[in-house]
Each structure stands twice: as C-alpha cells, then as structure tokens.
Length: 343
Image 1 (spheres, rainbow, N blue to C red):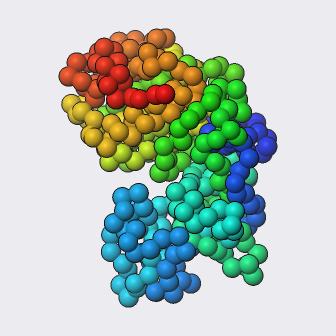
Image 2 (tube, rainbow, N blue to C red; image 1 turned 180 degrees about the vertical axis):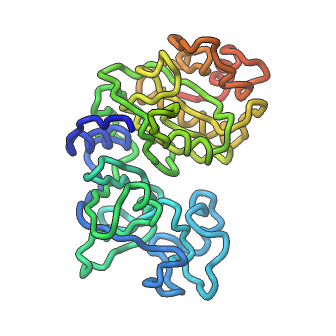
C-alpha cells in the first residue's frame, strides 16, 4: 500500500474543518463508541422508534435510503428497520444547541484518531445512555469503514454549512460562499490521494465512470500498488446521490498531469449515456458550490480529455457523451453555461 503521510491529529482535524464547512463546530464530542440499529440489534425493542425520524420519513427520498425496504419480521419500530450498511449515528444531543430540525438536515463528521480516517454520517437518534460511558452509537457501516471496534475512541463533529466561520477554508483556498455545500450521502476515504503541496485549486474536471457505482467505489478504495491507484474527489450517482472519497484539500488521482490543482467529479454512467435529470441537478449544484468556494471561473470546468495539462498518451474518451451529443469541450462548456448557476 501507499506509504501513509505523517499527519498530526490536529492537522487532520483542521483538514476536516476545511472540507466540512470550516470554523467552529456547532457540536463536538470525543469519547468511546459502540454500534446500534438494524435487524440484528436485539438491544433495541422491536417497536423502538428514533428520536429524529418518524414513519412518514420512509417516503422522503432525502431519508429513505437509511432504512430497509421492509421491516424485519416481528418488528414495527424504525430502529430495527435501519439499514446497518448505511452511515448514521446517535449522540446525546442538546436540542437547545442543536435543534431536532437542524440535526435532521445535517451530516456529522466521524473521525477515527487512531488511523486518521473520517466520513460523514446522518444523525438519526439520541443516545447512548450516559451509564455506558460512551459518547456515540454508530451504524455498523460507519464502524467498519473507519476500522472501529466497540469502546474505541472517536470524535463526532457537526460544522455549520455556511456563514462567516465557514466562508474561508483553512488551507487558504476558500472564498466567501453564499451557498451551502450539497448534501454528501457518504464520505468514504480513498487511500489514493496525496498532498497538494500548497497548489491552489483552479479547475473542476468532469468524468464518466464507464462503470457502476459499486465498481467505481471499489476501484477507488483499492490502494494496492500493483493496481491503478485511481480516485476522484466526488462521485455523483444516477439518482443524484453524491459520495465524497477524497477531501478537497488533498490531491486525487483522476486526471494525469492536472491533479495538483483540480477537483475531480465522476458521474456514474456508461459511455453512451447522458446525465439523468437528478444526476445533472446534483452535479450542477456541486459544481456551483466548488466554483464559489474556491474562486474558480466557470470557464475552468473541463471534460477529462480536454483538461489543460492532461498528458496521458492517446487521450481518453472520458467524459464520453454525458454533456451533449458531441465529445468536445464546447459541449461541456455549453452544459455548464445552461445548468450551473453562480451568484
């Protein structure tokens, strides 16, 4: 595997501030964790609900992904219906500081100080009980992705999505940004990243995965030195879900010769596909946020094959026909002009 960079705990937490909103957190706690939720959590009553969600939320596309399609046999509560593979959590929230509605519409950053891994997870419940001496209950999916076992230490933080404290990223690349970052369904860190070494983010590069979401995530999580060791900062699924796999402050391996100063966005599609409507909407919102956040002109949004500095011999067919019938930068630029709205 790629040799890990020497990074202090404080530096890693500062990087999290940069990518998840920056500035002071509105909630932060450090301590021991455990796991909860799903069909196999027999510590939950079969009829036990969730503090932050109601049965009506099963039909809301913003939240329905958190739950199994049907309740496990013999249960009726939302707690046992949680999909343990999804990224969710519970903490002992103070609703006077973090009201229920804010928590429902926020993502928390979960950080493992032992290995530096982090991801985003959605608050769903209040807990654990104070007598457990733990500060967070995590989904089995979160624990597995971060390499955590019961009673390991974690830090859980929620950063404001926008506002003065979040306007400027800690690495100096940020700018005054009037819009919140689009919701990231999951942050699953790819090992295939490195330092930008102070390079400014100046471009956004658009890609077509030419593969399924599952295959793309697996490829980006493969750090075997004998493999391709590729990655991108974001992956936009056909249904509009956005996954982040490399922090903005780091260099991803997505566009040879142009990685140092660019952000890479992959779109789940086959070579002959066009963007789906939900995918186009999510991609446009993400691009708009990035342009505002890093002071990037709209003219600096490129298709992979047309990116300045890209130097793979023979070029690439990417981004195929995602942005129009012609495989050209003109088609990409026209799509950006017609879909990406900035202030």
